[in-house]
Image (cartoon, rainbow, N blue to C red; front, side, top):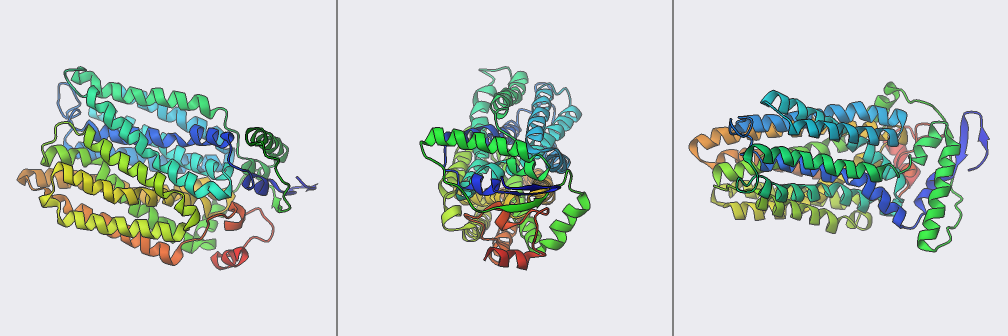
Length: 493
């Protein structure tokens, strides 16, 4: 770190973090922070897989298909509110404090869900669980981006967000024995499924305690000495693990330090400084949220209601595996082929394929519907994961967590709450006639929103691959910050 003035510092910490080679230390970050998406996938899939187990009055909670959709909407509503609430706190009090707190909220709420005594209790617990997960999205995405080198940021973000489907596959397979009345009492199987999520969360918490605070957050909030100590420790660890001597850097940034950043300044940043990026993120989040929440929250219900599937776990596991493989296989291309091409391509292709599936819905079986979904979401998974990557890297550092939370909340509220409610009603209505084509309208809406998101990416996307976060969007506290999108683009050229 270079000379320090009163309230102003010139630091080389961002450049030092970005020049690090990949080492085992980075895997600690990935495992400690990224595994939260496994929890989210576990939660969503358990609910989708056990929709039938929750319907009986004696062993379940007496829920209808509409109630299943409502529970999904409550979970997403909690996630939206939790993202906004904890996102603001993450930018104000630091990444580490909040990613420990939000994981604690999730764990407690999941345990309480397992003890649900009636639908009202269950809905309330789903809301609280969603709050914890929503807070995690804001805290974790911002921390990961600030700790992972620029060269690897795209592939790591996409792959980590795609790990949601590891949890989804795990949840699907777990429900097979847990919902088998010959193995587990039906009144206890679905409760045990929720309890397993809490056990996994405790294991993640143990690892997460060793992940440091973001040095980028620290030096902006007048804690530059602590930031310097953390970076030196990281550099020493990486040198030991790789056997490579780290070269010096000559790129610095001058920061006017602040203890807090006001909400009006954050709002001004999002809506006036970067209006095109705001439209971009909104389009990406609405498309992927409606697609996933509408389709996946009620996928198990669709299989059992229209296609005669009694045990949906195997189908959901295949679907989930395709999603994860898609994110894992395609993730390196977001750093090489580029963000704009990959996001636009995955959004438009998955949207077109979903529309085709909607026109063929009446002729699909449980197997062919699952295979169709596996192909569609092989591409959609990588694109949807890139929506979180986009929101987490194209806005200034001081607003990163809240920007992630804002777009997650707005996009998810538009697509993730209305989606499950719409599909729940469509299933209830179509089931009266036994006609699966009654839910095709939901497929067409999701397809249209994904295609629109891809088109918006073509015109407004940011070529962020390989660039430092500070070059993509200068911190609000940096000297000579750009005034708008155009000057930001010029400053990177």
